[in-house]
Image (cartoon, rainbow, N blue to C red; front, side, top):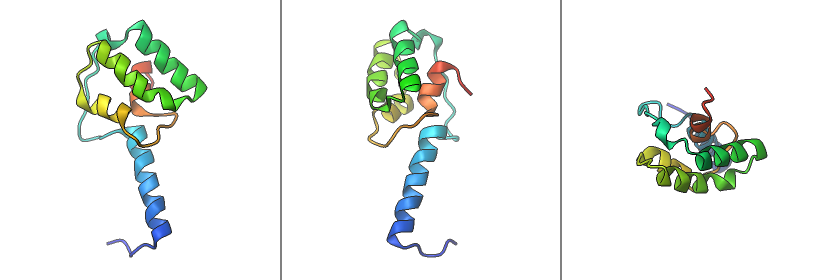
Length: 99
């Protein structure tokens, strides 16, 4: 069992967990990504997000994916989550084919 943490340590752990979820997603729920979702809009948005580090656009990527037929709740809810997104975000990397 971990020792009791002070408020600052708890905040730091929560931030680290959020960062790990953004990068790795849920390893217990593997996803299948349909290549039909890779429209020109989806790819352009993902490239722009990645290259410009414009992670405020990730919710817009969710809209584009949904317009392309994506109905995967894990992908869409992650993109629309209020948590911070960073370079290495698993959805952006999935769209761009990065491992």
